[in-house]
Image 1 (cartoon, rainbow, N blue to C red):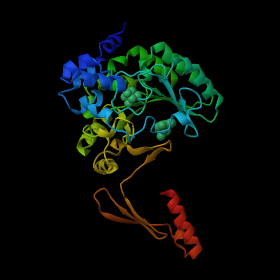
Image 2 (image 1 turned 45 degrees about the vertical axis):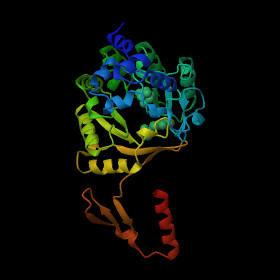
Image 3 (image 1 turned 60 degrees about the horizontal axis):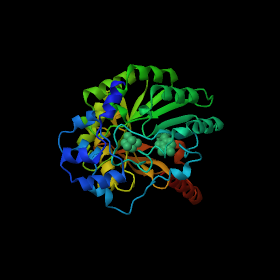
Image 4 (image 1 turned 90 degrees about the vertical axis):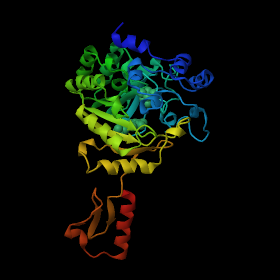
Length: 368
Ligand SMILES: *Cc1c(COP(=O)(O)O)cnc(C)c1O
Ligand code: SF4
């Protein structure tokens, strides 16, 4: 057994141990365990400083998970965009391929908790079917390998999936979505890296939500991936009590860059059942972007998006930098709130008939 498998095996994954460790009534913990599987690696547990801190909140169940009735099992409507098991094909030229039902630890806010942790719902039996679907659809040029966590599969399974996808002529890029560098960085072994680097261009999106997660083992694991030429991006979920604070987010983004990871998305928390206590108002995300843009490296500023409920895809949100647009000029506000004017090209400034300007206004509506 590799050392990462041993660490994974020593994870806390039962209500009893966790309730004793954090002094939570066992009956509560047992109810929550039924609602969504529990798992915390000893490594991630060691990063928790105290009960209720931002890392604790992400992985230790909270009684409020059982409370609400207004949210959804499948808030993004993924199941309706699923032509075959394990594939979500929503966008024209790319698809999600779910290859693993398990994660190194379970995030209480997981969007896919209806499936994650349950091997019958993301079954390995459907891997070949997924590869077949991708091969049969020449419009797909980008595959996002996800789950669950793909990097919990054994090296030879990962190799099998990547090799088969790479052999499809219309696949230009491969991406892996994983939280392993955060929860179980020991999994990023030299042997795994050796497998991954054979299948370039291969991108990886990791998932860090708090600066304390970038402990030395995680930073070293990210370094091994970056050294293998894998461009690294990060996805963060905006979570109340975890990272809903511009200073925390700025520190997170700066630490990611130091670990050679480019911040990619901040997600507004999805409307997933049992996660009401994690949701912030949307304005919080805008406030965070405003506190980043201009105030720190542009490389540290991700896109803030809402994954539209019901399956509309990711929609970017920006603070109001554009005050107005006319044929003549654009009025802008910079990061400090100062006003600037950009003149439109002269050719665009001709006099317009009423009808033409009506169309110009319509175009603007379409853009925004
Ligand atoms: C997020 C997502 C993608 C990838 O979107 P990008 O904006 O290209 O990163 C693809 N398919 C689905 C279903 C997704 O949710
Ligand atoms: S690692 Fe990702 S898929 Fe797994 S529980 Fe966390 S959010 Fe869900």
